[in-house]
View (spheres, helix red, strand yellow):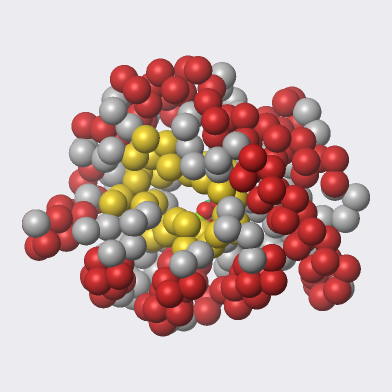
Length: 274
Ligand SMILES: O=C(O)[C@@H](O)C(=O)CO
Ligand SMILES: [Mg+2]
């Protein structure tokens, strides 16, 4: 059965962030992910994970910023990563180093590296692809040195207009070109189904590559619970079971009402297969 991680940036927002760990554990989650840990000292997060018997399975490298203060403000300022952005080499490297520091402290094996927002002209330039591939290679090497893995995630243009990495094809091409074992795919089935369609086919294509490091889910199109809308969630979970895929599935959705009240889909799936 797929293993499910609670995304604490989306779920349990009824509670202040640091109380979401306890809420997730109370509902039976044994792993968490969230966007950014940088507002808190790593040891505080580590204590919370330990206290509630949770594993940290994913978080993002900073969305931008070349020092701690800028990192803390980057997301609110609209930054969405720097991996493909011109003139951002030092910022990118600072972010990767900071993320890997946290990953080691939190014993987290994977971090997500966001590519950034670009206008249509820049996005089409060959030099953008070259720069992005070069930086991903560097990041994978840094991650390998500390036993960590970096992931890339196609994000749909409806939710994030201008996001450079927005198709599965782009991600697969990059992973194949670089071919580094410490670089993998974060397959967010919501983003895929939302604008590319057929998440099931995308999963079927991705699993045999051996490069899928993490999966995320949400209902389509509303990004609520997976069973709200057109995402073929049961078929997708069945496919993960059949493939005995060993990773984590992040519940990255906005609950339609209350987080706990919306966990019916998870209970139904658990009861069905146990
Ligand atoms: O899908 C998403 O939105 C996230 O996984 C993320 O990392 C950035 O928004
Ligand atoms: Mg996602």
